[in-house]
Image 1 (cartoon, rainbow, N blue to C red):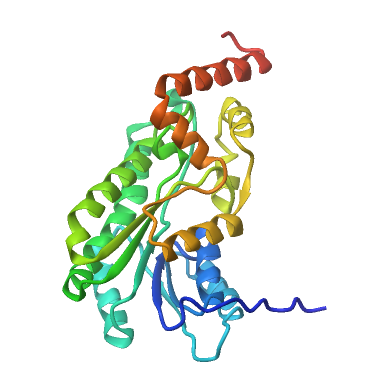
Image 2 (cartoon, one colour):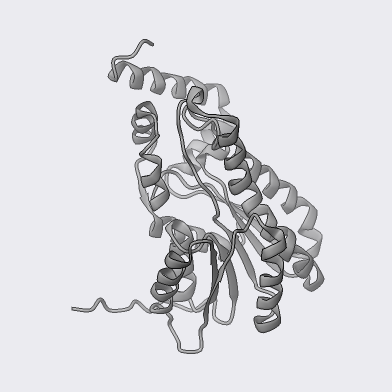
Length: 285
């Protein structure tokens, strides 16, 4: 029996969102949420197969026939290739209302197993993969004095954990970029939001399992459990509509508050959790 399509209110009717990294995970879930709320989306990703599959899934959720779902296949770290594709999009549909960035990878491991190549790859994809689309679209937003940029950081964007020595710095970088952008472009009536999701059930998290230290698995379980991509996307879009800067689903908000107001207590708890995890695994503490 076919699942009945849920028709929601349409606060995004007539709006356009470009979603980089929109073919899977939270990015795809966010694209679905926006379409169900009446918006139009253009998803950007490298893999043409997952891009086409995601486009069909998102298209099936359109609330009205006049909505549009577009796709662009491109590496968002490549400004030379991406810029003309965005220019072509703008010539057809106008300047989008939202630029939402989800491009990122995470291959956690013990630091002795990581190479300089691993660190550079994480920074190239996780930081520049979100920065490049901003650099392309920002002049259009400033000219219109309108627009909304949404970036994706992580709990690891305010709290470094073992196993994430290559990943966490890139998420701190996204947080810093978002803070600086918010301040600088506020006079142009451009909004900035940054998402700090906790562990979320996505293909990326499944890929992490191949190299993720077992201590990190144990610690993560004690820090609030696992959210679905749909839960995070719903919270994210609600935050975008309210023009919130910090958007923190699940346990993220509580952990951020502890880290911000009681940093030493946060470290004590974090260190305790690591000792417990190592003891559980029979390792020296």
